[in-house]
Amino acid sequence: MQNKTIILLLLAAIGSLLSGCATPPPAPPVAKETVILLPQEDGRPSAVIITSKTQEVVLDQPYMSSSFEAGKIVASIVPEETVKERYSDLIAADPPGPKQFMLFYESGDIKLTAESLKLYEQVKAELKNYPAGEIVVIAHTDRIGSKKSNDELSMRRAESVKSFLIEIGIAESIIQVAGRGEQEPLLPTKDGVAEAQNRRVEIKVR
Image 1 (cartoon, rainbow, N blue to C red):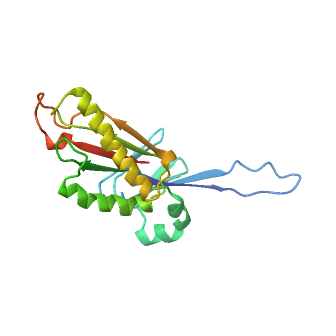
Image 2: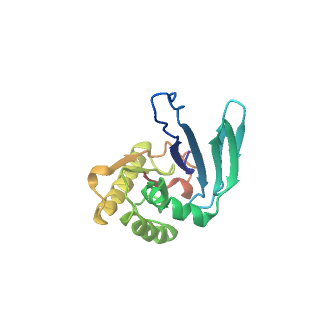
């Protein structure tokens, strides 16, 4: 699933050591596990279910927390400031979630629409500073023209986006491209129909 639920999972063993020859061996340490639900970057709602043998607790609010203590799940809300201060290192180390962009094209061409030209600049700004491990570029067409010509057009669109990505400093080795032609429309149409929503390139960054 495309949306991202970020959870801080913190484990701390709590126990005491007893000394002395006549002292019985110490009991095993009791693990205390805390789960904190962080808000999504795009503001969309998210949730996680915490279960035990006897309980089920749903965390469905930002900064809602559950702790497993003495065999029982205890839920609470942790102040945002407390989470950011206490777990700043863990939050900073969390990798960014996947991103997806969609660009649309003029009919029969690799020329972007006016709206997508504006988005192009946003894509450029975001990807320059995004630590991508892999970028997949998948291009599509509408059903104007032959299947063969649309396969070729979709690859031209994909390759043009690849060139753009390389120009802004993204390593060619992490970019994969594919042309789907008219095979995977957003809006299915009859042959010969010019559908703007199907003339597109999807850029998936992960």
